[in-house]
Length: 235
Image 1 (cartoon, rainbow, N blue to C red):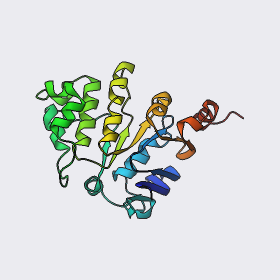
Image 2: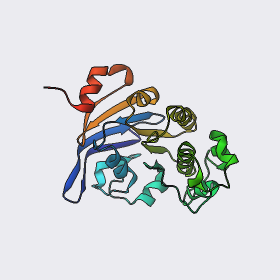
Image 3: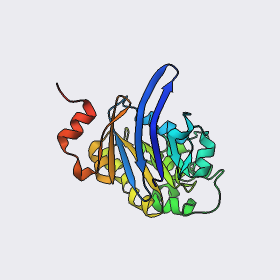
Image 4: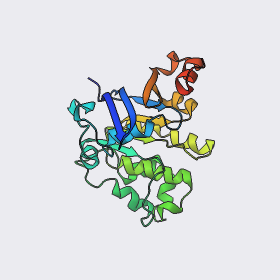
């Protein structure tokens, strides 16, 4: 049984339909990448899984239980945490205070504490008393990832964590993925950067116009197939 799955997931913003029957699965100890252009429905998928956007109960299952209609705080307590697009740090709080917010409401102990987050991103220890939003974009992204990890999630949802960052910074951010996976979390990584997604993922889904257009392992997907699934085949 998959750890997390969606089944014919449909999502709306008012009268506008954003997802059209999306099926994805995430297994234990796996990294799944969701790729696609702007407007493909990737962020809507993450908002649905995390409970920010409510859906039909049976459309999303976590560890066998239907969660599609559950609120975000309840889903977080069950073991899913999201690193949102744009980082969304609290500007009035220090780096350390932003990290500690992530531990609020968690149940029991786990691998991720302030010390282990600081070991993952050493620069944050040196900056721990600084305002979170006074850091560079890459360092703010590290805080956002660390904040999500502080809840000790079984599933970490990462929405466009490379957006707006320099390639060298993106490389540093993605170096953390193997350590996060080794500590027991499975990951869904939303990326526009196809190369980066293929480098870290065990499996890949491509989305276009609210639908899954291609899926498979990175080794099984050709460049042409990905291009057609990402942009649409040329008639």
